[in-house]
Image 1 (tube, rainbow, N blue to C red):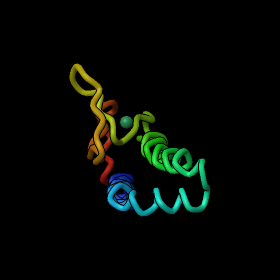
Image 2 (cartoon, rainbow, N blue to C red):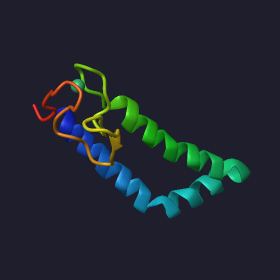
Image 3 (cartoon, protein in one colour):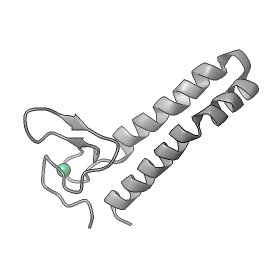
Length: 92
Ligand SMILES: [Zn+2]
């Protein structure tokens, strides 16, 4: 399975987690009590950290969700097919 496809699966999972967030926010509150909101926020931020650090270009190490082409650094929820830093095709 290519890095690009795995990154799309992660994107789909993150969208599912976002849509279902009212359910699991309530579940975190129920299971963890008063610190449930903080645990839920940490759970949500963990997904962002996973997207930034687990899906990196194997050649140069740049996140597949980041593009440094042009003047600005662009980040988006869906992955880039080609690495903007080294030009590697992530679909292979
Ligand atoms: Zn690269």
